[in-house]
Structures are given as structure tokens and as C-alpha cells.
Image (cartoon, rainbow, N blue to C red; front, side, top):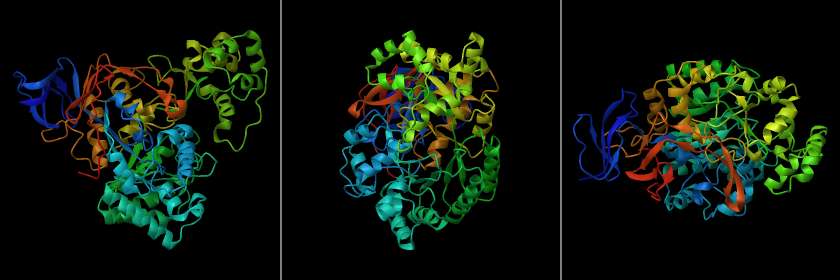
Length: 581
């Protein structure tokens, strides 16, 4: 008898072929039966009636930052809320191993600055107990989780471990330094890491403002990392390239040159972040065309694409334009409900709107946020519930202010107080120059492009893009009205088979006999993404953004049902994934 049958569902199996109505049977954590006959479902210890429902493989999210959270959170939210059954962490050159004893706080500050994960939460939540990367994997392997996790070794941590203060300050690496980094990365891959990651964008800085170690690494150092992958026999070279955030518009073509040469020389896949930046709105297309030429020449260069605009959520609980106004600063210590009550008073409103900002503290990385939000208010829009990530111009704060005949900052102030002060607005920074998603659609259609950049577990007070897998199913296959949609079969394959294949996870990503039984049962017609909300459930009461979804009937990991109708079942079949398979 089978352990589980998902019966009579509309199966989109992740291969890209047409959907069919049939049964998926599971035995010992693997797909044992794929039945398209139209006959009765086979017997099983447990049956899920999927009549009228969509059945897909579990989603594989290849760009997350659960490196610390995995040591205390067995659910790995918010990714597990959105049909994700495998995550790859250790992206963008930041991670927690290797670590010299006594230097743990430095890695925490690095992660906090780059990925906006509260340092207090990391300090209280991480149990540590490792020095080398293999030892870190051993600790993660002991965890029983709702989903599977895989890890990459981070260049920043490796550089700091090998070079100490020289590495942290981005001094040039010597040949001996490079050989030591090579040995650590090779050891990590042989122990089960799926790749090495680095960051070269000036937008990634530690909490003290220092660029991530490796930001300015010379080619010999980068090629030393690539050689480690080649000699270990597997692994992806992942990076946030120079110029990715629009701060250096000359760098991207140079980055493509060394990426394609490294990939071709060592025969390793290189995966890099590709975003549209407002300062050079057509630069992404140059990079995309160059990556296509690289693939034609035999290099494996894969851009990672964000499925929706990439920016910040603005509100009184996150970042907003009034935080540096003296009157607001004098009230900021109040419990939130009391703060909102004060902000509703006409005298307080008038005082805040009439004030100039206090001077920002140059030593605090996020102290510039209020002035940045105010300067970009013309792009700020009300997100709504369900959220609209492709709104028309009339949803912007400036358009609403014009309609009401008030100053945009007045409009922003009043909008911030709606929903008991918990309202959030979206400030798109990348991928929204044309105020629609046509560019994103073209990026997604890149033959070698990979759906990524969700940053699950990171940017806790800025974004909640771990929900992108749900957004891909709602917006791109069903709801989009301001342009062409994308085929359901193609979207499912993009975030199951393709993301798994990039990292060599050939045992998952499709619903085929012998593959790992990771699956979602979804009411596609009712699938609804809810507006993000701020919650305070990290260690030390740390803040993060969460986003729920309605319509996930069941999520299955290794043959066990881990979620039913959006609720955790308590099953913990997820484990560390070591190496390719």
C-alpha cells in the first residue's frame, strides 16, 4: 500500500509539459506512481482529494538567507508559507562559517548590515558550536525542519577567517591568502556545500558601513574560488555583481567579462543578480544579451531574476519619511498603539509636517532612510490587500495628494495612520522604471534566467519577497491585466525544475517516478496573497515582515504533509541537503 495519494488533481509536473488530471502516489518519501489513466485512485494510508485543485512539485527557492534562522526556527517562515520545500542559503557573500572563535559578533554585524536581519535576534538565536564550514553543516544536519535546506559557503566569511582585519577591510589578497581560501571553499564543497557566493555591489555593507569583504577582490582571488569548485567537482558560483544596484554603471560589462571567462575556464555555473536600475534603464538588456552570448559560447552564466519590483515596504513599523523629525523622535519610544494615538493629534501632525529632519548619524547605515523615502515619494504607492504590485499611477502617494489638493508628505502622513498605523506602502527601487512589469516579463523569459532573489529570511524590516512563488502563480498566470501573462506550466517549471537543476538537485523539482515527493496542492482559483504585516517573533523580540497566503490546501515534504490549509501540521521531515544528486 502507498503511504500517500494525491488523487484526481490537475497535475503540472514541473517538466513544462501540458497539465493532466491524475493521481500522484507516494511511498517511502518518493513519487512511486504517476497515474494518468483516469481510473480510480490507488489505495493509500492517506489520501488527499485534489479534485479541481492544482498539484505541483514543491518550490525550490535558490536565493535565501536562513543561515542563522535555521539554527532556531524549525519552520523557516515565511518561505514555508508559500509552497517552498527546499531553500538554498548562503547567498551574496555573507554567512556564519567559517568563524574564528571570538569573531562571531563580526559576522553578525556583517549579516545585519547587508541583509537587515536584527543583530540582537542573531546574537540571541544562534547557538554556534562550530568553527569550520563542515562543522557548521554538521550542526544544521541535526535540525528537524519543515522544509529542506542547502547551503553555500560565503566569500565574506572565508576572507575574514583567512585574512583577519586585512580581509574585513578589503585589502588585496596575497597568493598565500588565495590558496588558503581555495582550500576552505574546496573543503566546504566536499562536505556538502552547493556553491560559493560573493558580493561586489557597493550597496552591500556591514553595519559599520564597510563594504562586504571581497567587494573589490581581484580576478586572481575570484578565480581561486572558481578553481575550488572545479577541483571539488561541483558547485555554483553565486554573486551580486558590481553595478547591480546602479551605483557603478561602468562595472556590469566588466563583470560579465570575468564571469563568462571563469565559467568557461572551470566549467562551473555562475549565477548573478540581474535587475533594472533607474539610472540606466536599458543596462539590464545589455547584460542579458551578453549572458546569452556567453551561453552560446559554452559558458554557463545564469542571471537570477526577481519576479516583481524590488524595493522597500514603507510604514510606521518599518522605514518612513518622518523618523528624523524632532517631534516624532521624541515620541518614538512609546508603545506602538500609544504612538499612533499621539500621531493622530492635529497638533502633533502639524508639528511633524512643519519640521526639518534631524542630522543623520553617518555611522548608522539606515539613518539616511527617512530622507531617501521623502525624495522618492513620487514612486511610492499604496499596496493594498490583496497587494497590487503592478498598480496604475493613480495609486501613487503624489497622485492621491494631487487629487485631494494637499502636499504629498501630508498625504503620506495620513496614509501611514490607516489600518491602526500598520498600513504599508511599496517603494519600488528596481524593476519598475516603466511603471509596469513588461521588463520583468522579458527578464523572466531569458532562456538561461532563473527565478530567484526572494531573500527569504532577510531584509526583515524592508521587504517580504519570500512570497514570490505565490506571486508568480497569482499575478503571472492568472491576474495580470496590464500586459501579457505567462503559461502556468512554464511558471511552475521555472521555480521547481529549473531552480533545482541550477544547483544540481536532480532528485527533486518534478513529479516523476523516483523523484523526491515534495508537492503542493493548491486551489489556484482562490489562491490569494495577503498584504505583508510586521510581526515581532524573532529572538529578542526582533522585527520581521511576514506575508500569508490563502489557497494552499496542502504542502508535502518527503512524502509527509507539513501544512494543511495554511496551518502547520507539526511534521518535520526537512533536513540538510548535502551536495548535488
